[in-house]
Length: 184
Image 1 (cartoon, one colour):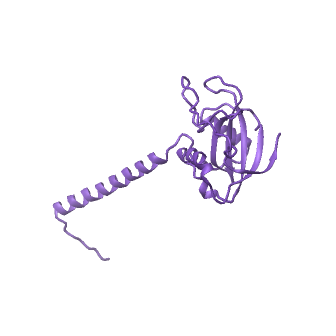
Image 2 (spheres, rainbow, N blue to C red):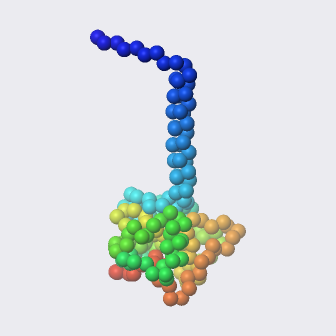
Image 3 (cartoon, rainbow, N blue to C red):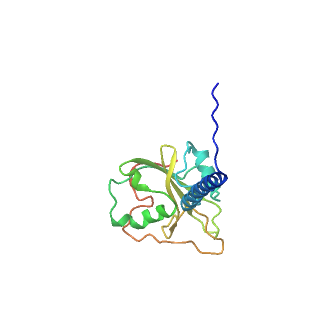
């Protein structure tokens, strides 16, 4: 049997412990800052969204009560490149932690649900989710008339919709080109 002993001065041991503690603290702070910046109310790019119940549960987690079935389901093609007409839509998605540029040229599904508990009591409000391979990659809340579009976050009850009205000539909500559509 071989036994090795070492004698370490207390000052070096204390300095090593303080250095290790500082490194651990720096890692914790860095993680907290990184996660704090990515922490959005929409839980960006949520995976394991396999069926209608998962989509409804995702929206319920954001505070929305929606119709039991989507009012429309579409397959969309995310453009290979985005022109300036997509700027406000991409900004809306980015604010929620979604990055549609990662999905350029991909076919995605868009599920649109009617919201039944909009805080202002407004009718014909919809939640649209973009889903790629069982992962929510984008979405918005919109009026059926197109008078407002905002993030998936629940607005304050006393406030009017955080509207960014969609100007005419802009892409359809979802910022994509329809490929096929099916209405249940």
